[in-house]
Length: 471
Image (cartoon, rainbow, N blue to C red):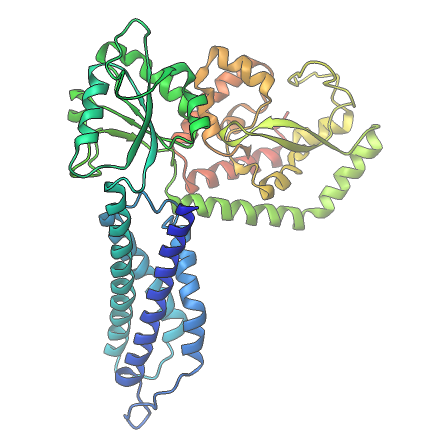
């Protein structure tokens, strides 16, 4: 609730800045820029452009700020980074406003255009940055005084963990970490944090502790002899919405892995759950919605034709659905046109193969072009899936994959997709071994996620559909 209140304060501050900027700019424009054909100033009146600007422009600014992630986590704001973001967004926004609303103004010389752009930019950027600076400084001061805290678990129980804990707790400007306790790596090691923090057990129970205690940060401060466990710890937490920080060794420092985020804070390597820049993440979701609406509307006759074909080719429902695992390991219902006989998976879940007798004649045709996947655009609209992302699997197969490749958990960091790089490369997997082969490409996709890569995968998916190379 407190975080929502702080977010509203920042949104209101940006709205006030935009209203003031437009009001002052409009006054400047009428008094110093616009002239009649005789060269006299135009009368100062509140015309249509003023009211359009004062009513709509502030909300457009807020929408742009939201898309670029300004309001995503108001407690994790860097004032310097925020200043740079405000500068770039203000410049782009002012240019758009100029070309849509101000280009047809009556002026004496083209120098007035430059004055107009410069004045609007200075007002919009200056007022927004000033109000944000006040609000951000207020938040940072409350964090440093521990009036705002982040629930944190410390991984480690020996000298490194003790030193880090003492350093963070005795810092002149605190980072807002509220340590709930520590977990140990090996039971035979000493617990030097006993008496200072509650002991929460072994690191293998970390996920449960995070869920129960609403943890926001996990700080790994283990000994050099325990470093082989770092991969296992990160693997446990990859699909969880927590920030992971690791105490670095000298190699990490020399290799440039340690990035400065605070002058007074402890030197830590931060692993953020954010994979894509916020603006790309927002644009990806917008693209998902627009593409899904386009497919569902434009290809509605195709949906009807396939539904009729399924109904006439075999007995049973037209749409088949079952449970799969999605973002952050949460289950959801996935929808497909039924391409198999009813009861094909009555007992144990099975993967399909090229010569699968369970597939109907009509089902084999639509699977060739992957048309059986078309109902999943409803899943995309519901937010369960994305157009591009790793293919979701059933829990039964995930359990089997995890025994061989525990890093499969990384796929749950993102929404599953209708198509993926692994799907383009391998098609449908016929066994667990092929699933693991496909996994490598899905992991590479996640580490390189971008809108450009999504568009490329979509292009090759369309080629596969047109060439009927599905199976």
